[in-house]
Image 1 (cartoon, rainbow, N blue to C red):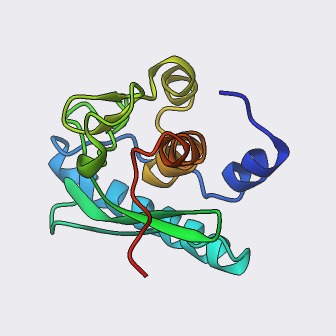
Image 2: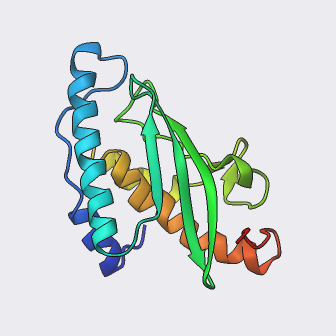
Length: 165
């Protein structure tokens, strides 16, 4: 993952997590979930402060399924998509696979079901930073750069219609 100064700054401003627990670790998962929320809240606050608000997310009560919206502004138009992911049983060793279901099949940089392709650059960086990276980091280093690369391309190729005003 090539990190420009902007991405480095974004990542460094997201709180690191300390609890190494996933959904199967009943006792410590709730502690990890609190850290995830704290990190996400800080990330959203930073984004809003920098006029860069680009997603909304919520989870089921157990924090194992996440869903919401993400958007990307291109040529003064807002392209908005449903975003969802599940926390893998082996989390945080395994990063979540972020899905944009309505873009399924519209780009080569996506797996079946609308899972965005993050393998080559993102996974080694995630693996080096277990358990410190969390959902906010996956969004910042995974989804955000993916949107920035793919949405303009999809628009230029005529794959995405102009958003409704």
